[in-house]
Length: 354
Ligand code: NAD
Figure 1 (spheres, rainbow, N blue to C red):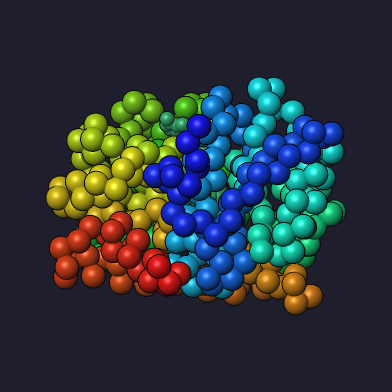
Figure 2: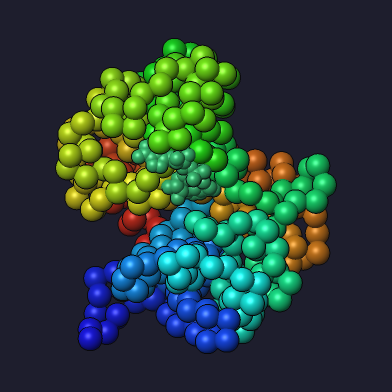
């Protein structure tokens, strides 16, 4: 068996912990990539992995991604991620969540958790019964920040698309700008609504065709099939569904000037950022543009720690800073001839002292 620290995804992670609790059936990995800027913050994924190696890979890659995302969002947090290895039936019991919460608590605040794929707000509320190192909890009060990060991520994507349109197309408004949206779930649906208000022309796609068609009809948008959305002739392609869609074949299909969306790990490999750059397509690095959710979750956590209410306007103000960071990346990319994803990685590594 090869040791995980010889795997390509191991990047001098500060800590990788295997958590086992036979009584509840819990097997989890908690990975802390960097705590240079603060406690490692990042959600918990609950997923059935056919091969446990993939769980380790996820924990390593996603925790590093969180280090970069938090640093670039100017948050006083490092990067961490937890992965719970679910059984085939994805059995999630209160005992299993309690055992996981105890493992988070035992780290004494070095890791702060929240929702990720397979974990709901209600699950996090259960975890919060046994540890204070948790965020993304149900919101109390009209102007209080926190809860489901999806709408905050959507807000950041909307600001980021506007910045990209300004940078690439020299336009201050979105009136008639054609945007193709892949995935109209929690984030993509929110992005579509915000863009429609500004008069953008939308083409939308989702494998949940019924829900997508209903939203398209409400927003007076066109619909494309999941197979066709990436080749729609448009100004902006906004991926809000799956990762790794920007591979050789995916990039060859694009007929747009900008790629800007929420999906994590959009580039199949780093070289694919170079390919977009060579084709003259402006790319908004995913972990920079999609930081709205983690901004909300983190400010909620920091306010709770201080025993203060968290003002939603502060969250909005921070999210409105995402375009400034993107502009900085694009300008450096233009002046150095290095693709925006590489520029962003370098900036993030500098911020975390690597
Ligand atoms: P979601 O599950 O609510 O929405 C995803 C949508 O994509 C679903 O409606 C699904 O049917 C659709 N979809 C799946 N495969 C598709 C395909 N081949 N073609 C078209 N549509 C497809 O998830 P979400 O919370 O909206 O997140 C969307 C993406 O953004 C994910 O990659 C997620 O990791 C990333 N992200 C989300 C947040 C957040 O705050 N929710 C934050 C950062 C990044």
